[in-house]
Image (cartoon, rainbow, N blue to C red; front, side, top):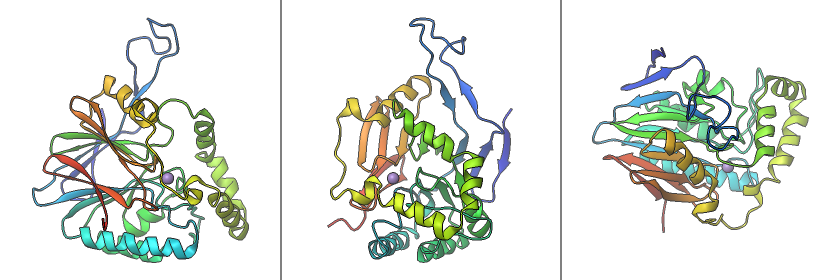
Length: 302
Ligand SMILES: [Mn+2]
């Protein structure tokens, strides 16, 4: 039985399962009875329930990539994000920040990286005003540990989460490492996620460690892409493939992910949609949930 834990947020219950459970498509856990191949393993995700009052909205955004391509451009983007937070705070029931918020982040035992102070201040103000903020780690900021939770009372999630809002079901997460292929990345993620890797990185002096990380960061896709990402077609959008596979096992009304850097609103099944949040370097897109529906929007759309 899952242990139910009441958090200090209004109208929100989090099912705190002590371990990850896995669900198989039939009784044999390893080999598929029809094709003989290793079976796809589906995860039953930890779940959260939210009761959303009629006059409020839930906001979702991801991939701010604060820090790239340089300090001046990042600061402009940070100010834009603050304008967005100021605009939404009057009706925000809660805010889901869904990964790659920072292009690089590492918490040392007694120090955090310089910068992004306006953004952190704004998050503090929202939290102090009672707005719940949920922070999902992305592949660029997976090294967030306890600081945001201790300093800002912001819950950190490292894996996709199943959320029920007024009876609608959501699967939400950053989106990295899901779907077919990209095995090298999945292996890398396991390594970077490991305690030993994090312990070793923390032993490097920050002048060097953060310097190396920023060098790598500047080589990333988003720091070097002059134009936005393009739609690859339904067959080649791996997160859509993931949603369709997941839908065979567990139905969700909405799948909300980031990571793809392309705002998308695609049909997964008859009553199921996949929404990608885009990013804030080219698109400035975010999603809202209100009145039983998810809408993808652009901030300061011309
Ligand atoms: Mn990203």
